[in-house]
Every structure is written in C-alpha cells, then in structure tokens.
Image 1 (cartoon, rainbow, N blue to C red):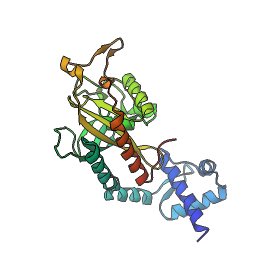
Image 2: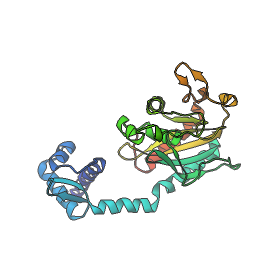
Image 3: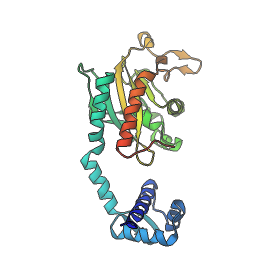
Image 4: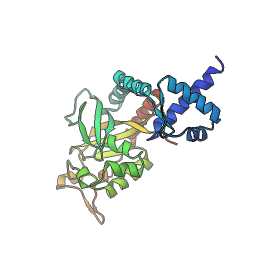
Length: 275
C-alpha cells in the first residue's frame, strides 16, 4: 500500500498536466515538467493508457487525455457539484449582506448564471438561472476575465461586434476593457455599476479550480443609483466617457464577504488562487 499512494499521486500529476495542455504532448516533456525519470513516466503513461485515461497518438508520438477522462468530466458535470456546494454559501451571503447573490461562469464571451439567490424582498433584475449576458459588462464576467491571459481575452473579444451595450456605461472596446481588467485584477474584485441595469450595481470575485484558473465567480447585486445616470449618461473625462469609474464607488465593505465566499467555494472544490 505504501508504494501505491506515491504512484497514484504521480499518475494524477500526469493527468493534471495533460488537462492543462491544449494539445497532446510527448513523454519527454511530461518527464521534464514533472521531474520524473523517463522509465517512471512511461510506466505511468502505460497504466493510464490501459485504464483509458490516456491515449497514445503513435503518428505524433504524443500523449493526450483518453475517453475515460472525458467520461469522468461528463459525470462531474451531471452531478452539478459546483452548484451544490455553492448554493448554501451563496444563501448565507445573501442573508447576511443583503442584495441578490449569483454564481456565474464564462460561456464564450458571455456570463452564464447557474444560481441566483434572492433576498426576502426580491429585486427586479434581468439576471436569472440560465440567463446569459455580455461578460465585459457583468461583474461576474469581468472577475473571471481579469484572471485570463491578454491573448485569451483578445480571442474572446476580436472586434466591435463583441462589445454590445445595455446602457450608456461599460467598456466599448478591447483597449478600455483591458484597462478595466487590469485595475480589477490588482484590486481583487470586479464592480459593475449600471452597466447591465440602471439603478443596480454588482460586486464579484472569482472562484478558482485546482490549477488556479477561474472556473466561476460569486456576485452580489445591490440597489445603487449613480448620480450621472440622472443626466443621461456617464461623465466626460479628457479620455472620453468615464465608462469604468462606477461613480467612484468600489464597495470594499461588500467585496469583503463576497471574496470570503468565493475563497470558501474555491477551497471546498479543491481549488487554489493563482500564485
């Protein structure tokens, strides 16, 4: 038994590496990346291949994930573990902090809402379970986008058509979106103030998987009427419309419990924040 556990751990490290790569990779790269002897690497790959978790592409001499790994991922999705774990955490956030709580994920360049927990006196919002909204406008979407690489963000937002607007507020192009994401990544949470619906603002923080990648986001929406909305649109600055100022309100007092719930959900699913 004592020798089986380290072997299992090494095998899981191999699967984790393959899961993070966009394409199959050669055994030498796996051995080098994981600091494993070549003989050990081939033994692990062979066992995983026999079990169906790894496939060997002979023509390319490379290894990728097998059908069993796909089936395991599909089973994970069928069981809805993320929603099951998040629901009570989100309910606690709403009960203590007020507002409407959300669990959202990225679906291309849109935010897809998986859970919505409402307060005792529900607010009238466009968000609901199954609703998709432009990710560059939502706090949950930008909380996740802020953790992606610039190349990934550029691929999701290739041109003007990728920036639909719902109100007069929000980043209108890639340059402005990148500026907002930089600020929010450094701050640790995203804020949306009247971007989706006038009179409401949302604070959100990302949830991470075991590889430190953003897998979801926790958001809390509260009533807030921005002063500039009384005058037909955002204030003007020397750089143009102040789409990303959120009226100067960043709500650290709301962000604290939102980030705490996001961190608790990250830990509960075996995730970790990026280094």
